[in-house]
Length: 296
Length: 305
Image 1 (cartoon, chains in turn cyan, brown):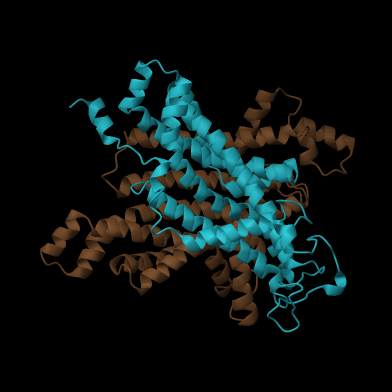
Image 2 (cartoon, each protein chain N blue to C red):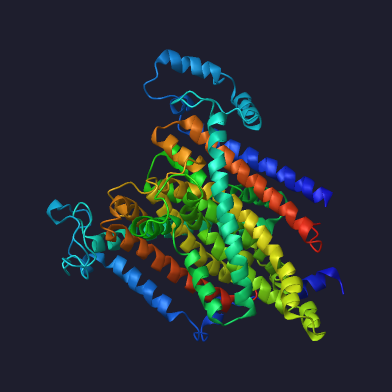
């Protein structure tokens, strides 16, 4: 058998995205529900709470959550040191945290996928340049690089997105390239070329749909990690500038009162844990369903 | 193998140059690097003097080569708050970070590996369920949140450990747990899955078939092979700790390189921030290189072309 042929046989067809329809058994319903409630809650924040997340009322500072002595349903999760409603800050703050993470991941996916497609499909010096750069980016400590960028460029929403997305892009570029290389060796891609399809058409119609599964899985798992990084940056006071209610920032602000008024930090932190947990469980499930043999 | 190590080392050096370029460009992207390197109150005469000192009147390529030279000789300028050489400041702060990172790594390995082995051998049992919970939480609980909960429970409610600071063995416990927690989850997950693979391998089935004692089968045949990816992972974790310790250090007031960076950011001491980032990045790159080479040494089956 020729090397080329054996290489082709070694590449098994991947599962298309549609494969998970009809495979709902074992689906993480609970995580799905948690995530759905979180997203709906964050999206419909004005309908769920009548408090302005930024409204200060010192007379109501440190109101305990509903279950504790002195707590009321008026402020179900209590209020912070400035009398702001914690629940409404969590709901509005989720918009900041989630939007940041999703924006950074989308930007990273688009750039990374394009670079990965280009790198894998073109090969040659383009491939070498892109892969060496990817390697270099991945060899950097994310947190420290983010710190120095934010130091120089100043603290802003856009800054956080822009500094984190290259790290995501690098990971996607490497992964997509690997997938492209194996898909490109499949006979139907040759066939498409023989049939006169343009490079763009081959990439969009034949290569991209085959790597979409991997992209979705890794994107899900990366979003979870990204939420942790985003909230850590805010926690350090280098992410989104205050008074914007961001989850990591809320945990950080509540820290000095934690011994006596634990709810200031506990609930926003719990929001992070629940969100990331739900996303990770769903990501693990997607990976098993879409590509059981692959270890990311 | 020699050619692989050579190529990999070249790539590592290229990565260090990449970091240097990034910082070099970044410092100039905002305009005048002197404005970053001097406090805003500096007089024009001082500004001009520094400009000449730094060679900012020279062409860009000469500046860049000079900067590279500085990095490779570890001469990173002076803090403009204290006036001390940045390399001295870094050397006094790297110790605590390394000590904390190593403690966290030991914790992750000592707890993670046995737990992973047991959960693979007794698959579906109680310990497996506990391990699964730890693995899931390890990837979902942010280190800063875990730190605060740990302090609240084990330093405030039950005063077993100090709230912050670095003073004696007890002060290592909470920060090491907080830092090592995600790594523990990773080690556990990896040990479990590679143990499951190893237990399923032909040589283990053979060992069992010929009646070898289960402890030897698991401990010698399966575990030795299963540990290879865990060793690599631990190395990567150590590299990750160097940069990731910044959050933990800020909570526990740990005078390591992360805390140093944050303090320097507050007073806008750019030479220190720049030096710290470069040092951590170099540490990160070197550990990664060491891991790749180690991988080659411990697993003779792996051959890079």
